[in-house]
Image (cartoon, rainbow, N blue to C red; front, top):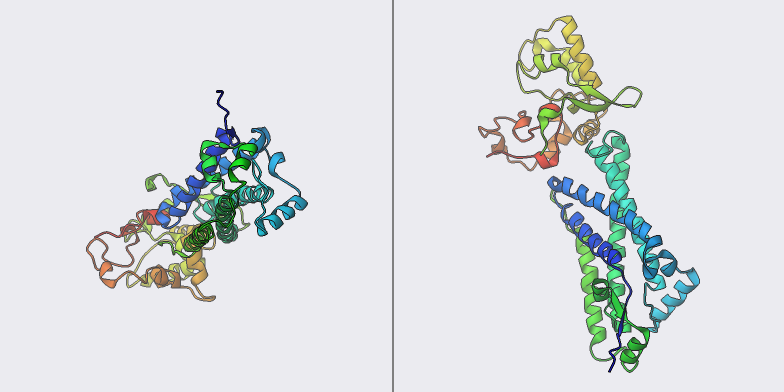
Length: 389
């Protein structure tokens, strides 16, 4: 007797690979968002997500029948009819994506693309890193970061809805569509009809099981949103850093050798000029005869060169996260002389016990390089922070 194949191939290999790779990327992005020192891995996940989205858009025109947008993007009338059927538990079966899920797929693609875009802008503008470093300002990055977070919350809600829809589909149509996205195959219409036609929707404890799984899925989504996150670069290669000039253009500023010699080598560790506003540096340079209890002597030419450098690379011109947050924490009209006296520094280090600063490996609060190895070149990346024993 000739064997009759009961299933047909619906999802081709590229579509299935895209689906599960995107799942893996989202899981990776979530896990690497919980600690800031995993930021580079989080960024890599974002770039991969961007590549996957570009592929899926192209595959939406070049893939097999059920992968194409023309197959599952339906008009509002069909979507409305399908939703009405879902409410009454009378769902028509679709071999490919149903009208509602078809639009969910499109929304997820667009949201993911937007999340990747805002993530790239945030990374380049706030961390001053990545392919587009220096193109976007810190202010633009702040807006992008806010949008990034909002979009992530929305996509979590969409993902939860997507999973609930899959569970509901299994409950009403008795078809494991999650398994079909692994094997690529679904039952042929006639075979499916013969199998499920005699089964009642509310048979057994199916409703209870469905309710339990949907509640678990929703709670997982809520947990992802509300679980709080925890809050290595070769620094010798950093000879220039990006600042904005007086016209607002991003420029590269080379490390000033005179400042390095007179301020960052002769007396103490170099406190990077991006960490205080220009008014603070002017106040400090105007009182060198009482420089934290010492008399510092610089000739007029050297003093002017150092001051010009400090002003050009002060917090107002900096593009780093640390300098911008320090600057914004200082009240208008104030000109603190010590970085450790700024409100942002105090708040950021509030949880560090006083005894830590007394360790022989640290000595004082002003020894920034003890915990921030890139401090002298203006790098305070979260991933590089290490508090010595």
